[in-house]
Length: 417
Image (cartoon, rainbow, N blue to C red; front, side, top):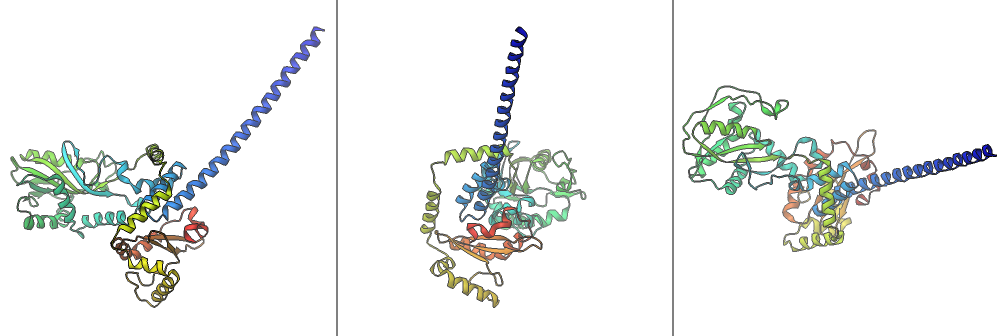
């Protein structure tokens, strides 16, 4: 009898364990199905937010949708969000003094590496190009020097010296315009352009691997007495500040004191994924009460307050079809319409309520579906004129990039219909 009872009890325990195992397995399968569906929805939401941000009619709306794309985990939206407000992710701010080894430094704006080009706004891309033009001597960029002087306010009689380059001819090409300007227009500053003696050429720092740990070979000597003089150093780009620290030692050895440094641009350091996500989350919580309609209202009000409204935008709002027909006809005839580039016919034209618009240009890649370059034309006349003058460059530059997966189906996107 006891054996029978033990057998029954054992069988009931096994049966109960089997049922529990089935229940746990079922719940696990259900959990993973729900999780995979949630991740799928999250991915699609991220793609949609990125597309909406890319074709947004204003910077405020662009930042808002890019921020939501970051929270949805979209990589492209994360980069778009970072470049929409780079100052939020950097301890160094444009035209705001910061210190490197107690040296007050200032730069005009951020420099972005070429690999991030497709995420930049038109002004950001133009500035990056102007930095490269300055390095090659094609742009005097005296304006950045004047902004830096206005920010640092050096003492009267301060010596302006320039960062030595890898070769004398590069130094002359890069800084000769500013040196001439100081000589002619800045009587309270001392021009230190000719205070170096070059001993030969060396490898450029940007061509060396592990630039942070690279030792900069000194190929110059300071050939004047700087005893008791304040020195302002001028250079093209500030990254780590290693070149500035080494030059500071040489100037101090000649008796001078480095009281400031002016740079054309500061290299932007990309923030980490966690930092970007937490920043987006913080802003989303803070701005949660601000609706998209309020943002649009602010943009509209701002556009209405401007006295100069683009005639091009007003014409489009008056009669969209007539404008499109006339523009297309004149472009086909090789003529110009205002500042419109001849031969560039928009495939789609989008009209916004704030008196602005966007031109969409279709690109074709053999073997793939077409995608668009969307160029937003603001209502304010000066900004619209600037973008229209660069329209052909924007279209040509965007034509060579690889379209994202979501862009391959932009024919169905509401911003392009």
